[in-house]
Length: 472
Picture 1 (cartoon, rainbow, N blue to C red):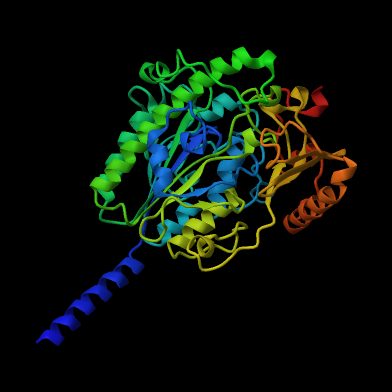
Picture 2: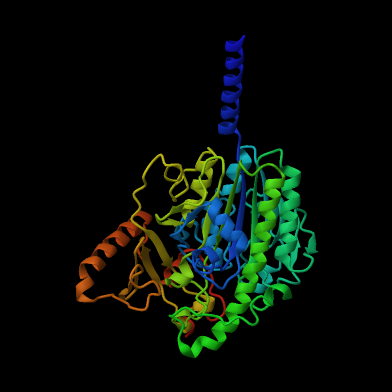
């Protein structure tokens, strides 16, 4: 009788383990807009108030070298959806359309029995030739352009966070109540409640902390109004006043979103789905915020390319650890699919890090590719923008423009990138090594590093406003 009892217990344990291995994990993917990696409490910023994310860092795997390969909104998001590099999917310029025929992440999940949802900013629908950015951004995204997402509460692109419209599955226009990120979080929670018994993938895409910086709710702005903001050493003195003002508002948005993350985490626990839910927190790119006297993104400096990336999956990943290997946007789709034991489309160009994450293999990663095929809008030619290709390794950043080597930084010795080592004799061997690694990456991608005009012509894109170099 005792032996029979042991057998029953053993069978129950085996059954539970099999169920755990075969049960499809949920995915909750939180995407912020323009949140640079340097501005989180747990990475050493003692001023920004992010308690929920600080806790998450102890429960998740933290990717310390996560990079936005093309650090600007539309191209980064198209890369996230396809697992392909910008010159492959063709979206290397804001407000150009991701082709409907691209095989995207939600389509794979949907084909494998998942419910799919997208809430918030989309910004890969594009607009028709002759239309302005504003005209294109105000229109609903047609059903055939939603790339596999069924539940749909989306605005193509808006930064009016306190009067934010969205369209539902039937293209009916609504307005989020109050600060949109808070309302979107509530909607995401309702979605999880309704789908907790079935596998789902939910993208929650916030507009903040992208400018305008001064529009967070008052309670969050009050956290910073009297704070003596400490600037990064690479912010010139002449930019200090405007940088401090901008950063107060930037941090206020961050603290608001931190509360949203806290609500999501609490609800996931309350629903009893925490163990089998993959939770990701990241951003499409960073923000220069006057470091090196520069603003916004697209640029190859750390403030622009380095992003937060945390992945929590209690069933399989031990929290509180760090992954220092380079990781970038094309790798997100195959890695999530790999963790969910789903097929990875042949079209995907990124790397599946599942084996690395689970301790089953050691990936050999030279570095991450950073690119700007066409500078535009806030960093167009008139504003000093330039085409570049670069490589970010675990220690170094190297970039070249159309005239040759441009930047070389030792990020370990010079974390604020204030000493450009390019073309210095004592670093010639290092520079040559990085150049060879970069060229190997470009050859693999078939990237001939042409002038921006060539790519615009090849893809049949029109220039917006005064972006074309021919207009200057």
